[in-house]
Amino acid sequence: MNFPSELKYTKDHEWIRLEGDTGVVGITEFAQQELGDIIYVDLKPAGSQISEHAIFGTIEAVKTVSDLFMPVSGTILEVNENLASDASVVNSDPYGKGWMVKIRLTNPSQAAQLLSAADYQTLVG
Amino acid sequence: MLKKTPFHHLHLAAGAKMVEFGGWDMPVQYKNGIVYEHHLVRTKAGIFDVSHMGEIEVKGKDAESFLNRISTNDVTKLVPGKAQYTAMCYEDGGIVDDMIIYKLPHYFMVVVNASNKDKDFDWMKKHLAGDVQLRDESDETALLAVQGPLAEQILQPLTPENLAEIPYYGFVTGKLAGTDMYISRTGYTGEPGFELYFYTDHAESVWNTLLEAGKPFGLEPVGLGCRDTLRTEMGYALYGNDIGRDRNPLEAGLGWITKFDKGEFNGRSALAALKESGLKKRLMGIVLDEKAIPRGHYEVTTLEGTPIGEVTSGTFSPTLEKGIAMAYLETPYAKEGNRVGIRIRNSVQPGTVVRFPFLKK
Image (cartoon, rainbow over all chains, first blue to last red; front, side, top):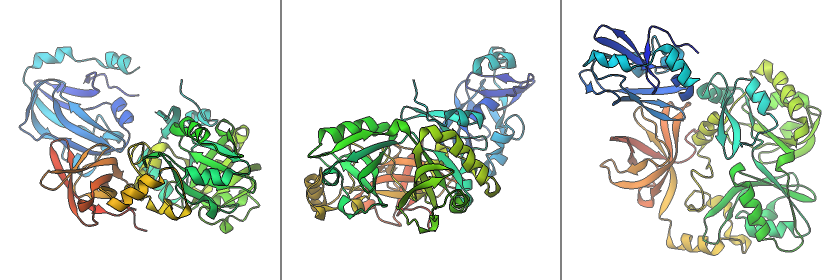
């Protein structure tokens, strides 16, 4: 499985690509494989302020529904509108076209607690 | 320790994702996923390992009267080569299990749900009457379901039996893929297809022969994930979801397998009283308008949010591309075309009540 080293990870299987005080958030390859066919992604709208570990959306797969948790506190700047018409890109390209939200970090120092790719890989075995 | 079917290592080799189901380690899907496998079965054919199902042989001079007494359908209507969908009920009308009874010239084979097999066997033993012998044949029996519009074309070259002559819920005893088996035109998908019962020691050779023969037709192994979406699109009840100890066949829409005119059977008087007093709820389908997926135990409401029922099976329908639910609705709301809601997280998602199957062919 692929866990790009430039990303940071959470134990809830989200990734974040940090760029200064903004970040792009999605779910990991491990998460999309566990969920199976993803049908809908329901995200909180741009402008929402969401705390670290709080829910920023839900993801509906054929077999199951799962909440999405914010890796760090932040304000949603943009949501990936393409997921509304084709959520399956989260399965096919979880780190690219399957991104979910772009956020502005409330407290960039929280990023220090995130997992490295190596730590995350150990976690999911 | 989870139980393994004789095909377990073949599933792993084929890249299956395994899950626990009724005490068994079973393939939920292979590499291409549930939606792909679902469409494969609807358009071509898929092969399911359902060897976790239980098979109980019922023999003896009084086997027929015994089975007729413990089941809701009329076993006396069966002739050798025919099978019957039926249920066993508790005295209060609750359901012990749903099952298929196959009639052979000198005995019956009862096929039951994996998770209920031991309970069913004990229940049968407890109600034994007359000259009847029970034998649990589950461990020696492999069961593959080949389902889909191309199933017959794929299987016909592998057997001297004329498959076209086997009617729905009919079966023959014969050779297929060089192996003695029951070839049964039954299934749980709503597609044409066959279920093949044979001894486990032939498991690997039959599996390989079927897949090889099916390759030009697109046949692939498919998992329990699409088995569930396929059966839900047809509105077929699943024990543990839609039917169970606290559900009865009448409210579940299984009145057609409940034969009051056949004489006494377990649960008859409770069910007759229920019928007389009027059913309080009904198992119906709901199709949601918007992008949302109902799940088991979600609350069904009026559009205004008043509770009127409960979802027992819910999924995304790959064919309709909508969320669908099987749900018990209070009788006044259980009408085709009625508008209802399903509470999904913080909102009431609107939908329409439909009769089964969801998929009108």
